[in-house]
Length: 310
Image 1 (cartoon, rainbow, N blue to C red):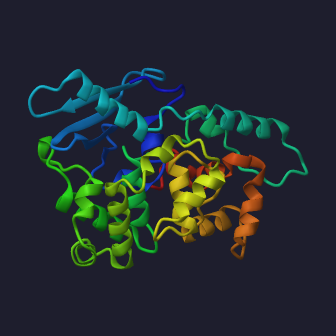
Image 2 (cartoon, one colour):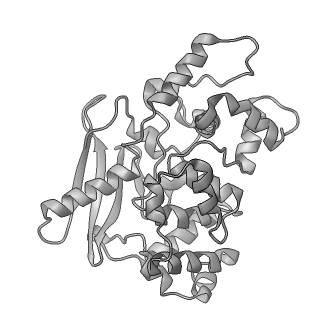
Image 3 (cartoon, rainbow, N blue to C red):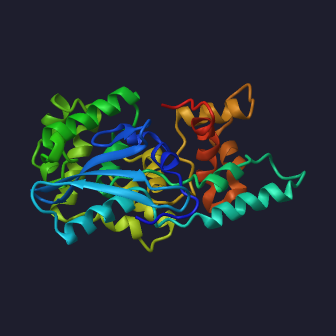
């Protein structure tokens, strides 16, 4: 698969924690990203992605299937992987803004993070799921809980309801599969707690066709209008709404949570944690890229010579 230039698979995979959630796996030593993909009901493949050559060399994709894999099926698998790696997202306007700020160095401008490293290395693409539905479910599973619980919930969803795939894996469950389970299942088996009715409602509405979340990825709506649609989902407060917007390539908002607030305060050497309004002012010069600028600043140490994130 062709990629933008520059592009770094590790930067995209470890852009946030979703690579650590089933059914994704990331072999950091070999730099291979893998997961089962559902091509259609009853037909799954195991996909592996690795870099091919140097910058601009693109990505090599290896697909394992039961029986012969048709050209159309291979194309569908590559389409899903391309969407997951946000290969079609144009970050050049953001990189140009970063370079412009670095060149200006205006003394009256509020202190802005130096993000030239991101422009030089091609950072800023967020690892997504092949479907918006999966991203929405996983976003719900990140709210008000530890990362260990998020991992446990998503793993349970996959093992209990995912379709079998080659090499012993399972796909992420379809909306229909999740809708077939009642709220009690999500409470007692998935251990989703208060999220149980939200997960069931989301799956039911998508499976029935009442809600088309896949249309959000290429929606012509502006961010405010799209965010208003997402906010109507049961269980989606400001953080969940803005987090899903980020995965849709909309970076107008910051998706602040306790971790990012504390990290901003530490990076800016504040004795007390700044208000959300103050944090928004810090990144306001980046305009529609404010959320991406903040995220790259607070995660920059993940991608240094000695990464602080696994």
